[in-house]
Length: 81
Image 1: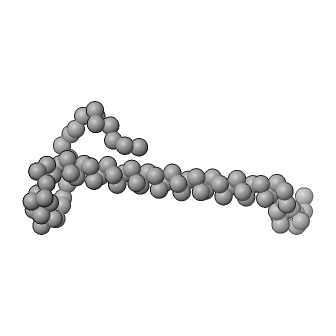
Image 2: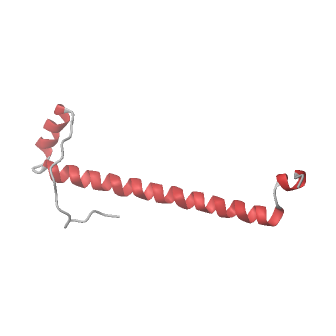
Image 3: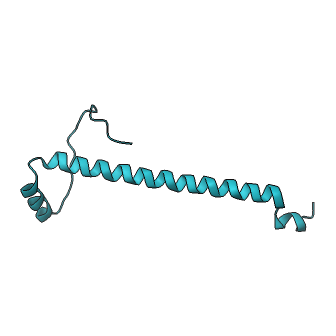
């Protein structure tokens, strides 16, 4: 996580609300840097949420596998094989 400040920058096109841009420019001397910082924070948070969700899924799968290993499944009782 975290952005690599040594990565080269490149221009991008974005469509933003004109009023929001005007108000933001009044609050910061470097709009690009501000947007980049906010976007990096958003990406870090989104990646952390995804990693947490994946850990929860893996924990659930492990618990389910442990339960099945210990108790079997309902299907085991009704299998015709």
